[in-house]
Image (cartoon, rainbow, N blue to C red):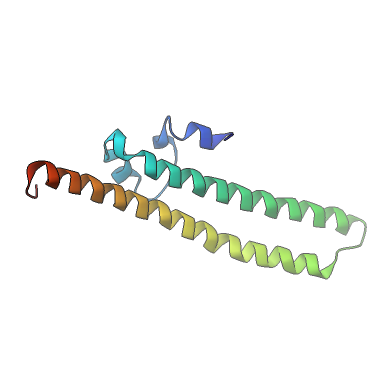
Length: 118
């Protein structure tokens, strides 16, 4: 079951900041659900990555207070942090691609209804 912000997303996607937001909001309601699904996944991936990173930071801080910080954990934290940025950028790029795909479907539907390009 989805919780928090991802549950609110389908009701009011205009509250969220994402690439191509104006183009997304210009789409008819029946073309928006596939984009919302990609946006949900993006939020889930981002929130999970940040939560894991912050959890590891907290564990390392606690261990540092007792003077026992394993070098391997520091390397894992560094790698996780370095991979988190590109991972978020990649998932945000998927949102833009989903908006473009929805616009293409809308254009194709308009062409098939009229038999010619608008």
